[in-house]
Amino acid sequence: MDFTDKVVVITGAARGLGQEYARHFARRGASVAVNDIRDCDETLSIIDEEGAQGIAARTDVTSAESTAAMAADVVAKFGRIDVLVNNAALYGSLHLMPFEKLDEAEWDAAMNVNVKGVWQCCKAVLPAMKEQQSGSIVNISSLAATYGMPNNLHYTTSKAAVIGATRGLAREVGRHNIRVNAVAPNVVNTDATAELFQDKRDKIIDVTVSQQAIRKPLETGDIVGAVLFLASDLSKLTTGQTLMVDGGTVML
Image (cartoon, rainbow, N blue to C red):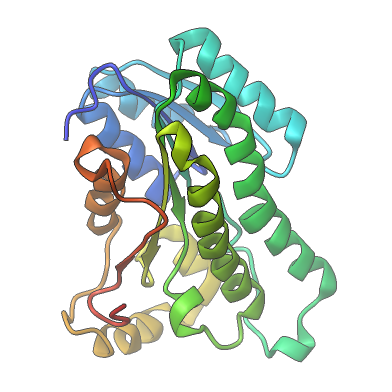
């Protein structure tokens, strides 16, 4: 999977999975644009260490103005956009509780970032992809969308919406040779997972692993191969699909 001369945009890239995706795209020759509401300087340093070109910007994925500016900066710097990885999401900052006790503001925030954010970023990059008549969008969903995650209905619902958006958009833009797919991981051992589950993290991971066919906890590097495959020309006739990376929990 060679990404030489390819330009990859990754949202939510300040840490965790987004940072890991940036590392591996850079290692394979891509120019990488990383974006987050947080500072992405650490990720930019990793891209540089891998010998690749990179740019970073603070981006609010819920804002049409912010995402449009991000895409314009990438095109101005690199001349094209070949891949978008929609990784930005609210997860670790959410609160676990029965659905009837969920705060309306938190529900709206989850939908804003996790669903509207995907839509805004797709809108921002599609003009460049349509002009070049090629591109790959990889949306990050979750096992929660297909398996169901109790006491986290706002997150579960938002990630199910990502799968629906992936399928609908794939049908709309396929005529432009643009592919849209999703990756749905199980619980991954990240800082955000630690923030969400707090002192119950180890127990949650143990229970999660016990339900998998392959009984090993997922680390950040375990998701990378699926994202790289869907972004690459190796999957050039794959679109509208959701690839489960969950150790064999849900088998579609």
